[in-house]
Length: 154
Picture 1 (cartoon, rainbow, N blue to C red):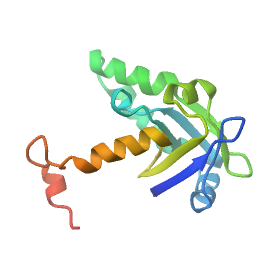
Picture 2: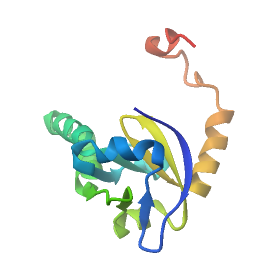
Picture 3: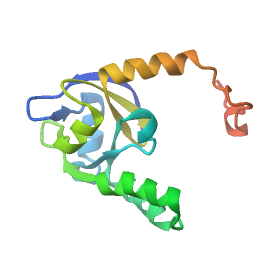
Picture 4: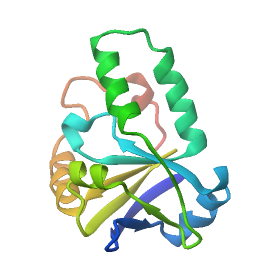
């Protein structure tokens, strides 16, 4: 389970050092194999996903089972076309492909956010801007909250 926020620096080669608290779990799972791709909401957030290979395989299976249509084809192109398998090195670093770094505007300072089964990788400035927007909007701005959210025990 991945949760929390880490502000990190990419090294000169574009490698992300996974924080220690997640490193052993990722190295011990799927042999340290991860997948990095665009997020499913790229048009809104411009962040990347980093997932253990096993989690990616499950998402890929679900994607491929969606009937073909305009929206599903766009989503498949986003996620599948840009998906890149990477292997964490012994130091727990993953090389983010140059094409993905450029698309997401990643240069030096990045934010890694745990999202349960995956991480999001953000440019730090974009993350800060988005946070201000998210935190200032009410959760139910579009109407009623989904019933699943209403029953959360907080």
